[in-house]
Image (cartoon, rainbow, N blue to C red):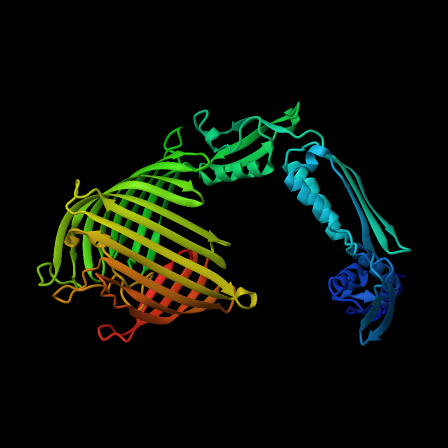
Amino acid sequence: MRRPRRRLSLLLLLLLASQAHAGVRLTVDGVEDPLKTAAIAGVELSQYATREVSDAQVRRLYERAPGQVKSALEPYGYYDASVTGDLQQVGKDWQVTLHVQPGEPVKVTAVDVQLDKEAAQLAPLRRAKRALERLKGKPLNHGAYDAARDALSAQLTANGFLDARLLTHRVEVTRADHSAAIKLAWQAGPRYRYGQVHFDGSQFNDGFLDRYVPFKSGDYFSQNQLLELQQALNGADYFAVVNVLPDMDAAKGGVVDISVQLAPAKRTIYTGGPFIGTDTGFGVRGGMERRWVNRRGHKWKNELVVAQKLKTLSTLYSIPLPGDNQRSYNVGANFRDANTATSQSRTLELVGNETRQWHGWTRTLGVHALSGTFTVGKRGGEPDNTPGIERGQSTLVFGEAALTRKQADNPDFVRRGWLLSVAARSTAGSLLSDASFSQVIADAKWIRAFGTRSRNRLILRGSAGTTWTNDFAALPPQLRFFAGGDRSVRGYGYQAIGPRNSADRVIGGHNLLVASTEVEHYFTRNWGMAAFVDTGNAFSGTDYRPKIGAGLGLRWRSPVGMIRVDLGTPIHDDRAHGIQLHLVIGPDL
């Protein structure tokens, strides 16, 4: 008996296999997107495009398809659609064609939105209510209705109506005249005010984190302010976890306390690794940062850089004063040993400043003390006593004021953004200084994507500066103006161009004017190329002779940031020839 049963089972399997087909090809005509997409998604047959299905299944699902299409179109306001179809077997597959006549759409003829008086007086809720009322006269779209209804509910919560309830939510459709009436009613309840803010898990003195709170006890509750508080605490870089929530379990009398759950971040951060840049050469950097030094939230950061053309050792101690303007007091020191194509310098700089947010700008006011030795006009490995090389040693104490502002849609890859920075420096005459000087510097950059899928970018950049001094020879290279390099005029070495002395050696100038135009095109999401033209120079007096550099580059959006490799060459310059490599790793702005 076992053999006949096995044979019978095998015959049944073969029979079923002969009735199975590769899949169903579904076509819907008579409507366009979004109705077409909705109709296809709503038909169960669409799930069998790549799945085997039997004849019986296809016919059963085909009979259901017209009703499924009608149901799929109703959320878009089409309640009287008619659907016919064709079912054909093509080879091993099935071809299903559905012909849709959507009919006349249902239009919203009435919108009735009921809100408590106090809630209806608030501007965000008035706007949300008007968004619902603007549905009147339009074809009924359940998705748009749901979004507008939920937006008003969200605004009630966001503006302190934490007990708000939606009492009535109906869409009454009259098929006979293709009309719909929307009826909504909310019971807003009391508008809550803030009670106390409780920080749990903080490592700081009582009261320190209160400075981050953007509201006072007794103010009306605002969800945006809770988000602002959470962002401020995350931005402070003290915590690994920040959760800001209203304590509804303890709320009473229209007052709600705010619970802030915190978990400290790793206190000490060590960083390090190799890097390369054409302005600095190959090098390594290492750093140590204490996210908080004490229970008052002070910070301390140290960094060592050792590269072929640059060596620095810096330390910075910061005293944050949280609040609306995000102030901090900073004191630091920086030792710098720098070598460029035209200068060498060893300087020690002490700085004390205050930074804060000011009308959308980052403002810095401070005092610098800069002392060191330097040479300018040096070429390659020439000895310091070579004729024409200028040597100097000076100490300068000067004040500095700076404003910086930037906007970007995406910090990693900017499609619309800009950066503007302005700085002014000045000594108080010759007080505590070997020379008196005043200086103004401005830098700007503008980025805009264009073309199909924003695959192209136009990047404009400019720098300008001027210096007044009674002794230019006492200014170290970092207070003189040079041009050339990765972020200046490409095609020339770093700080390789500028005014020359009587020995025909570049010594830097009083003024600077540089501009750049660059166009990028991306073949893929991460890879692209660039073409650029840079122009400008440093100069003294009115003797401005701009240099021009042009070239092509490669762009890679790597895991460590944007990598730019450019090949530039001087244009119409009798002194400079050949191709200069430029390598920059870092953000756009």
